[in-house]
Length: 264
Image (cartoon, helix red, strand yellow):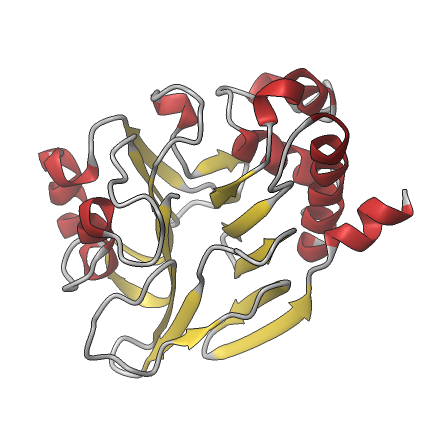
């Protein structure tokens, strides 16, 4: 399983989430505690928002802990909204194009989880991406395909509904041609204005997701694992939830793509 962290609030240096905390994202990349994959060394990435609508993006295939460029970047770049990810591959190659986050226009997206038996229906998944979006399909992951399918489903107007509809299509494919688990999905996404996150699985093993508002930073951290052991006020997001983060406010809506998959 991958690990990721996102932040929204008053601008901070990226290192405040990515590398400085005792259980930072870089620490998690080689010492994760809440997943079955202890080492996340198949690449990393950071997407951050600044003065322009589209996010900046830096990705590479090195383990996050061994890239001095990443440490320098996060120590110098300040942002009020960013997504960071360390990757543990579920089958596709280790390449920059397969590293998260993925971006399209002003949207950024990253995922922890899997679509069961994806290799057996990769072509079918690609067919869900319309011709107008397919040139933006750079890699081979299920995560990028899901992201582009959600854009096609209307991510701009309805983030929760669009991702739910796209997830339902992937569940149907996994049920027909894939394997268990049909879908495990803990993801973060942003349009540069708001931060969203989802936690869902078709079984009882949804990847973990937490959030915490910091009065000192005036910002919200949304993470796979808590960043500091002594901070006991991390709130765990329940499964089948879609969260919208707006300042200190968290809005939680049901996320139930299985009901759409069953109804089709």
